Image (cartoon, rainbow, N blue to C red; front, side, top):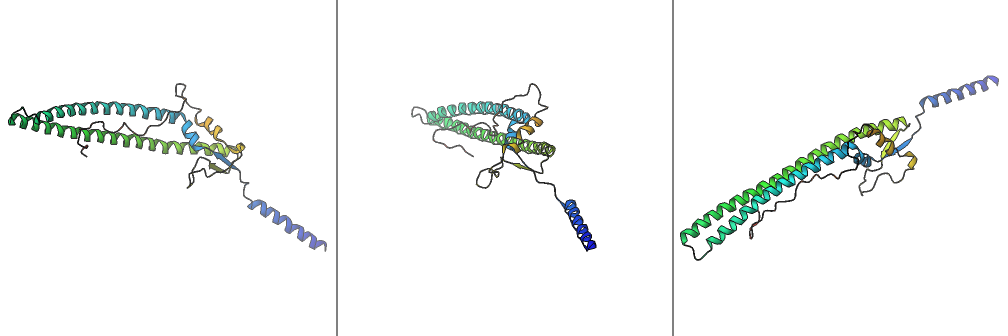
Length: 221
């Protein structure tokens, strides 16, 4: 009987040790707001300021081209009026008409130039912003992971991530599990003293569409 009890105890101890050896670490969920971290990163603020500056330069260039195009429009209108002037000779009317046609072709060329410039600038700024965002989110993710590990976290969730219906995939989380502020301090610890502190609004789109119009004619694409 004594031997049977000892055998049972041995089996129980062995079973306990086996469970302990195979036990997984306790799950500790932590949450972070990746959108807030991205917007609040000093590098993001700097990049947005650069994009805004380049967008302003593009606007100036578009305004200049629009001014040149509208000057051509005024010349075209004057020549077109001359070609319809009943007091002029047929030869003078024909000459004015030919000149007006050349001006019209120049206007259409300028319209295409403005539209191409706007599209190229918009694409360039958008690509720059997308590339920057991708690299920054990768960098922020690594830092957030390091902070989460230091806090003993085993799972880190992004509460800013939208679901298929447009809301966060994280419906609720105790504020005590949110490490966004801790990560924010970590990613901005090397922020230069002269770096802007207020988030700047990104402006991926370039200047507005062409302002060159000819009465009675649509822009030629």
